[in-house]
Length: 217
Image 1 (tube, rainbow, N blue to C red):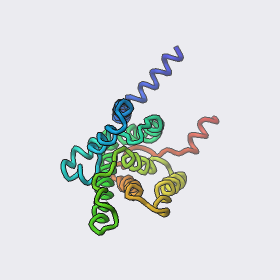
Image 2: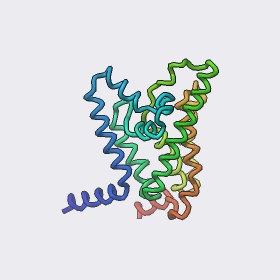
Image 3: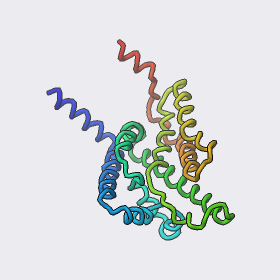
Image 4: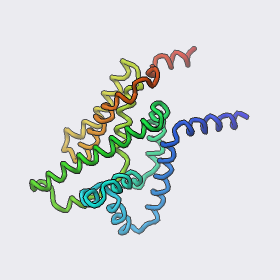
């Protein structure tokens, strides 16, 4: 009975964040598909689903949607940890529509701005023309935006420690030879923080001190 009860609670939690787990399931299927492709075909296949300048100029909507369904590294397991830790709590807190809005804003704007910067670098001769067809797929911009918006879920002063950690993780690469992707990640964090209007009225912020007190008592 305990096992059944535990499974019921897990299923209830999963149902509370349907978008997170459907997306994670899609990534699992696409990752398995990649592992069954010949290496030489895999790179060509992913380039056609990238948010690179070439694909964005052809069909921007398709490129932006398709790029969020594949993982370039082919390593799904890290996301099986990151999605329940960050996406699921955010979706359960904000609701699926607002959570999806944060994901879309971070993914779309960070992708377009970073690629726009790359285009300007190509025009100025600071990047090779071949960069228009670079491989750029993945879900990290959306994840960065959600990680940032979760700061509003945490009560002060814990919120500031969380923000400091997030800023360090995504900001330090900017100080050591930043790439356009690094800029995109940091922009996605700022976009997540800009989503404050979406979090108002979503309940009391989580206080770790109260949780610890409850566990002890």
